[in-house]
Amino acid sequence: MADVRLVNLTKHYKQGAEVIRALDGVTLDITKGEFVAVVGRSGSGKTTMLDLMGLLLRPTSGSLYIDDIDTSKLGDRELARMRANRVGFVFQEYNLLAGLNVLENVMLPLRYVKDGKNGKPRAVELIERVGLSDRIRHRPTELSGGQAQRVAIARSMMNNPSLILLDEPTGAVDTETAQQLVDLLKRLNQEDQVTIVIITHDLDLAAQASRQIRLKDGKVLTDERIHANGAMLGVPVA
Amino acid sequence: MEIVRNVTRHKLRSFLTIAGIVIGVLALTTMGAMAENFNALLDGGVKYFSSSIQVGPPDGQQSATLLPISKVVEIKKIDGVAAAFPTYGFQAKPGAAPSFSFGVPDTIIAADPAENNWGNLQVTIAQGRQLDSTTTGQVVLGSTIAKEFNKKVGDTIDLPVKPVDARPDFINHAFTVVGILNLTRTAPDAFAYINIADGQMLLRDSLPAELRNAFDVKAIAGGIDVYGKPGTSIAELDKIANRINAQVPGVKATKPSQIVDSFKQGGAIFTTITTAAALLALIIGGLSVVNTMFMAVAERVREIGLKKAVGATTLNIMGEFLTEATLIGVLGGLVGYGLGAAITLIVNGTTPPGQSTLFLLTPALTIFAIGFATVLGAAAGVLPAWRAARLDPVTALRNQ
Image (tube, rainbow over all chains, first blue to last red; front, side, top):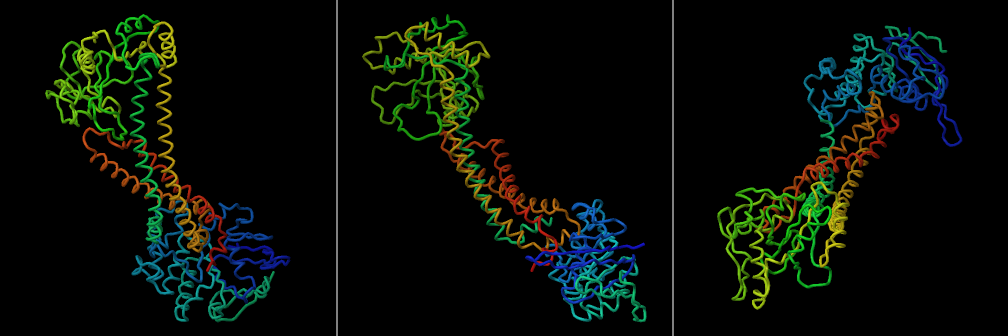
């Protein structure tokens, strides 16, 4: 059963008289526990696809199912609840709240879920798993880029989401740190069987995913599974 | 906790914003306390005059406010009149330089002690006892006048008080203080009560020496206070006043409603002016909260986007910004009220004995001052919070 299913998903923007087809009828299934890299040039529709999958945007047409829930039928409050419970986000710029320490940043998503008051042990555990136990009371300004992104990853895992969406997570760190972050994501993916979708320009990172989707002009150009030995196996493009 | 951190994140800006509210609430507290004090004074007048009819000489027919005491008997026969008492009033400090005051000047009131049982404004004894209508040479002092002359029960006081430039033939008498009244915050605080016989003695003293023996002062009243049965309405007292005017020649009964209305009107004007000035200051402070909150929203666009991404609803975001604006209002309200209350207490505390204090802090004013600042803070946050809550998360997350 597909964890995430995009059915003819389309997002058009109007720019004056011109219609921009940011995503143009994309159909694909992402199975639970997959580690998917979405690549493509700027303007290919990667970010729009991530925003749609993250329920931050509403599609112009088509459907998006997460855990078999048709999200196109949900209202704003239900979408917010879905984001809180089923989706985690990691951004290139970390987006940590400067006024909160590491623990408080990781616990931020608890605020917007019903039974979020008892999540501190989970937050502490996640901080341990990303290797920042000694930084638990530090503010974001006291962290390196790699540490800040680890905090963002821990935050994205806080509410046990089905899906974690990462937008250029290694774009602001050096190569060594980027690899450490990828290793961390792979470990979390394997341990928690959480579905990971990464938007990236970094082909080295993309090559380490279990599946690579290449977009062009809002359409899926290629969709390939990556074997453990690095060989790519094409999957049908719908 | 995060809300507090957000407020303290920009210390100078938050300080200046809160200072705007503080100044407004301080103005509201002091001006309001002044209005409350004035209103308490007027309320006493309203209470007293809404339950009695003041009878004096007819308008413009005589220069002295004197009446034949026989009119008391005539008035008692009027339908609806339950009691009528002669009264006399004298300046307690004749010749004192006129000065601006919110209070009532020190006055000697000669009346039957039994009159205190009638009417809505009843004074109570704090120390000693009430006057004895048959024993002369006794006085019951209001709380302010007792403090002014530093008198306690058993002391004597010369009344009227001899002016520093008194003529050699100035007459006053020693009265023994038998009681001191509880504070009423209205006219009786400045009154020295003596009985009728002593009042008539002071009336004689007030006449020119050549005329003192020309009148039988026992046949004269300074005025007459008339009461209906307990619980008689103002409208009914007005009717009784009309009947007195129609049936008793040589007197003028003033309708209680006229006096009460003039008191209420005076109070309303004063309250409106003082409160409006203070509210204006507070609203200007509120505008600074609006400005601060708009700046906060502009600075935290990405934060808002992130919160939406992790599940915050429009209401969640609105609530957070509204709480922040409300916190600014509450802090400004508490500090402003605290400073205002301190000023009123200091000014009241340094008021010379015998002068009416200027301010009265009441629970209603306290609730209004802090409550208004809180509501103002919340109201000032509505528009910025709404703007924050309506931000598109995609745009907000990638805001530079």
